Image 1 (cartoon, rainbow, N blue to C red):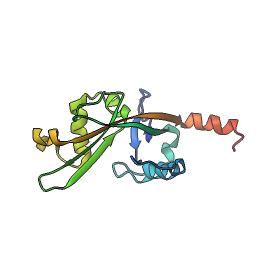
Image 2: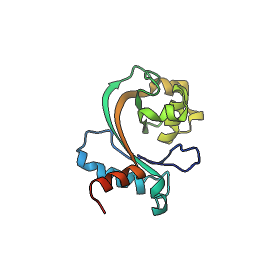
Image 3: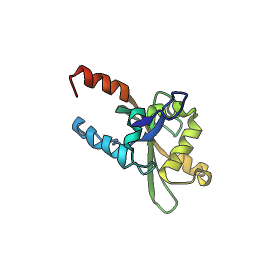
Image 4: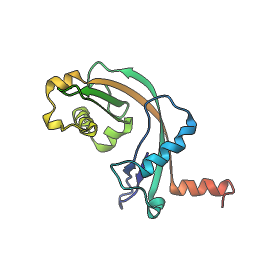
Length: 161
């Protein structure tokens, strides 16, 4: 996940995030780092002028559990993966990491509506019947982050040029 410190408040905002929900080797982190920086279709590719304002985070997803319903999870503790189909049988999926809802100030209903939108469906047209049919998986994460200043500090300590 890439975040940028684009405001005077010092708060970071999402700049790119692409990953996998499937088990994968740690060596693939480089590929996801590149993809989230340059291929997240929600954002323009990261430019060199942005580098000093960036923070990069890696979240290792753990403790996957089937949830009983779309609201069977705790804001700030769990990430959720939703899966659902429309009336024509087209399948949709979307996920938010555990920190997303709390960072955005969202409650469970707002988070689920935002995930429905992220999946590509207008949440205003989403019915209660569709909501009850959502398959939800909750999970937790172990997260590590490094901003550009921290990178320079570590690089210097390691004798990098």
